[in-house]
Length: 174
Image 1 (tube, rainbow, N blue to C red):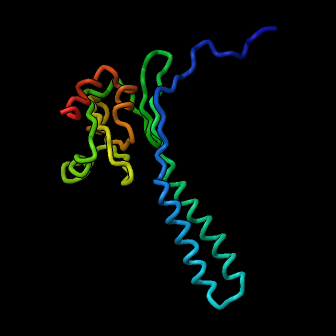
Image 2: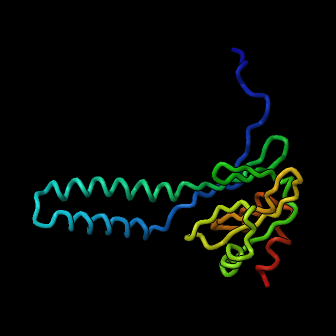
Image 3: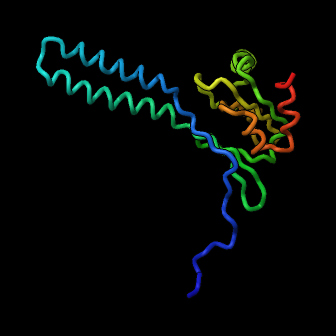
């Protein structure tokens, strides 16, 4: 039996993966709001005034919370050794990153405030308090840096830029 359909190159290896779910208490809050609104519509009416809003509002709430939780951050390594950071539909090779920095929760406001460059790539969620900043050195790309929310910046930096990890995390230990 011959194996003519197999690929000769080794597969892409996932080094880190993080799905950025909304907090659990948001689901309880959404359920409470759905029930409260449905009960208001049902008041002194037939049971259909309860069932229809419950179904429709529940579907809307689930859709909204799942769409807000759709961001997936991955670090993958190609067979040739190139590591890629993927966020939403954007991809960044490790070869164009000149410096990296873990942004703690205490500095997120400054990073996202007046100091933010409008040309930067930003993937931020309010419920994730830490970030990584990746400064680019690519003459073909006008993007000065990436600013990405992550629950564990140390692991992202260790997977994506292991050669820069010690300097990227040095300010956190002080």
